[in-house]
Image 1: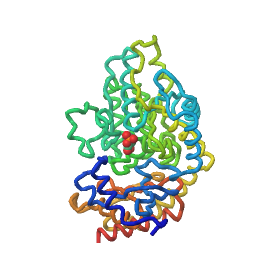
Image 2 (image 1 turned 180 degrees about the vertical axis):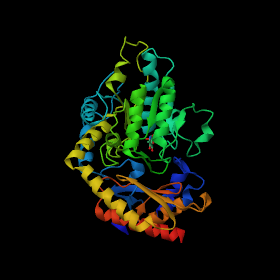
Image 3 (image 1 turned 30 degrees about the vertical axis):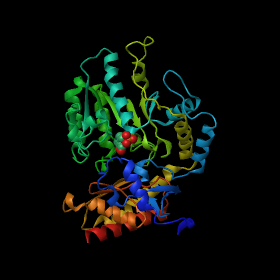
Image 4 (image 1 turned 135 degrees about the vertical axis):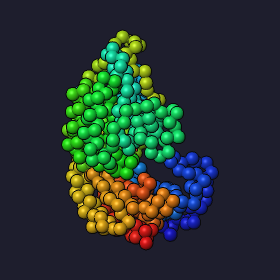
Length: 436
Ligand SMILES: Cc1ncc(COP(=O)(O)O)c(C=O)c1O
């Protein structure tokens, strides 16, 4: 009986939860039967449920957590900021801690002369980038460049604009009547994707506002990985064609792939960069669209004039989130987090290959940094292998959540060698149990 607390509470909690909370990407009719974990608190990289059971957070709470939970330095930054102000609007006014955050981010983002428009979710950072790219050309008097090119298997979020860029996963085709059409080049699953995308950019340059990519890894489509050189080639094609490049690093940003931003490995200097998820280490909702100085300057003009970017969200630039994000960014250097990502990535890659590389139920293992996907050779969607393998891992104390039949392994960036071994051991046993 952990902590001397009462046990046997979860049926109540699950029932109470299902009664009032509508969970995203979840069939609520089946929710209570799928043994959901109802979290009460956390310690380090472990989540603790209402019954005191512990789970290693091997999905970083949907890819947002970087340094673990309840990091004393981040807690302190949050408490310190609460003593000043929790939030004040960014519309036409400023906030000191947001200025400090933007100044320090400007030193590290791969965007020339960066300017920051803050929001709260990744999809909104993408939405803002789309509108900025669209208006950029209009502000410059160019009317024909109003289309976007996105890749096959892309995922950029669930708002209608970001959904339009996405390539129809997660039943989004249902919303086809609402989605605007985009030009589509193949995604990273096609070995020729880069050549084909470069050709598409050249062919449609005069109509394209921007090309939108997830540099290096298409995460939500199952950790499909690209070679940095291929991504770099697309970046050069955009430059040659004078088309804006939007890099969506909502998933890959803040150290996930072994560098602070995946764009660095691909030698990209995007005109617009979308960040979210890891920006506050998984503490608070914050995202940001980063614009190059060239893009930003196209919006300068008369007060309230037509060049103005008329877009902003109530909680954009929240001061509590900014204070945590600032401390988080400094901790990356102080703790040399990227060195751990690289070492643990090499270990995770080797262990997954050893344990599952030749497993007859495994079709592929893909990994960049601490973003990994184990693709199961499923007999079909009705077998629900992804779901069942994850559930078997959860029963063993490792929290996993699949993307279809791809098991995602995405631990916090401070994960230890022992924890990597444990994750792979548990995943291996879970695969054996389900696939028999
Ligand atoms: C590449 C990418 N862009 C955008 C998003 C959407 O972010 P959010 O869920 O914060 O809206 C995601 C979420 O997984 C993502 O992976």
